[in-house]
Amino acid sequence: MKNMRKLLIALLLLVPAMSASAFRFDFDNRVLIGSGNEKLTMGINKNDDDFLIFNYTFAIVNGPFGFSSYLNAFTDRASNQRHDELIVAASWTFVPYENGSIRFRIRPTAGVDIDGDLGLSAVQAFYDDIRRQEFSDLPYVDETTVRPYADLMVEGAYVLAKHLRLGVDISPQYWETFRFNIGAFVNWKRSGYRLGWDGNWSLRTTLDFGILRFEHYKQLGGTIGFGTITIDVLSPLREVTWQNSDAYVNLGIQVISDFEFITQQAVIRLNDWSAITYISRYTSGFPKQDKESTGVRIQRNHSNMSLGYLVWLPSFWAFTPFVELDGGLARWQIDFLYNNSFSHRETLDPLNTAFAQLRIGASLIPEGFLKFDGSTIKLAASIDLNWYFSSDRITEYVKQDTYHKDDYVFRSFQPSVYIGLHVGLDLY
Figure 1 (cartoon, rainbow, N blue to C red):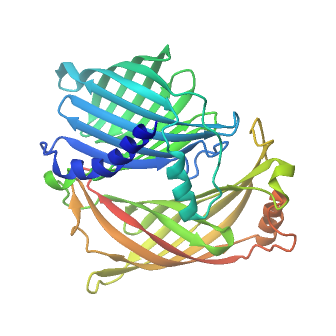
Figure 2 (cartoon, one colour):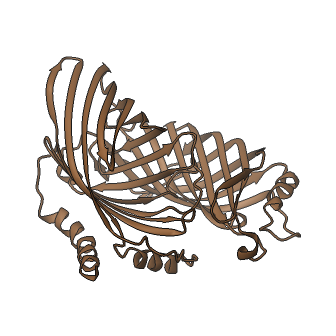
Figure 3 (cartoon, one colour):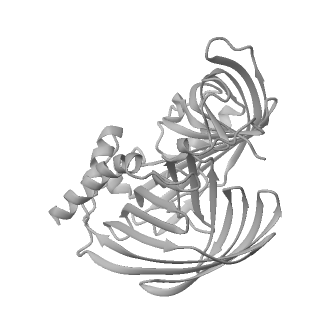
């Protein structure tokens, strides 16, 4: 087992270097390296515990050939155990029929799944120490298992308009047992949505900008969900197709002192003057009483949905200042998860209040200076002035989690700092 741990650590260190230097494919091919966990969800799902601690992804696409590997670390408070997972698989894609707007694809996949003690608890302890979080010191499962994996995907797609595809797929699979996965999808270029069913309904969202790829999986009607971020190291070697930005996706983090945790933020801008903003916050902790005696874990969920206006000011040097005003609805919700086994969840009725935000900042790097595939990337930072109405109602609601002190008061005025990426998309 010690030798396997050394091998895994060596792979984690060597794979990024190999992918950047050893592989030189055509522009249509990809080498993806990434990571993720259940907190990369933009607050859409509410997991029962930490479960997927982290994920490490490495994948190659070379024409019809595909190779993928996933290294996952899980903790399961329900069974009071942890386990690691290494999945390695290869695939080959056939296109038996393609005529104008209709295309059929068949992709057989075969691989192996190694599940057990792969030593990733040491990696988790390292990251928890850096983030000053409590380490979930759960014992590993008793034994390591090796299981075969096989999948046969059959897909039919119809091109409704340029870059817009609708389709369905079905995949008989073997993974411990035989099962079927069926789905329907809509894609614009490489981004899109897939609604799937394999005994449970799920929704997979993909935002693929070429050099950056964001993916989120959500089990509908359940609490399982996670997100991944991957980088395509071959993107700088492909032909740039970006000419101008038809829309923007801004992804970043916002630090607000009264929330006691860093927030995730996503903004979709249709042009320089309008914005549709979705901000979400997710955290969990224990009540102020001793956690062993209460056996209760708390999740505090907060999201904003707003409309706004953004004005770009004249540029100077590499900076382009901007001012943005947003207003909309803030939603607050508290969940109690009991007995540390999370066999029961109690959700309080949500509280909805109005809010407004004034953002004053600047983007660094001129538009079009950093461009890859069909996108351009800029860095941005701002000082945000947030005003939450009905602060007295928010105070009384938040104090129900028993985590905050009795004299806690939520302030209406909440200054914050934002930093993120502004990705401009050429949609056509």
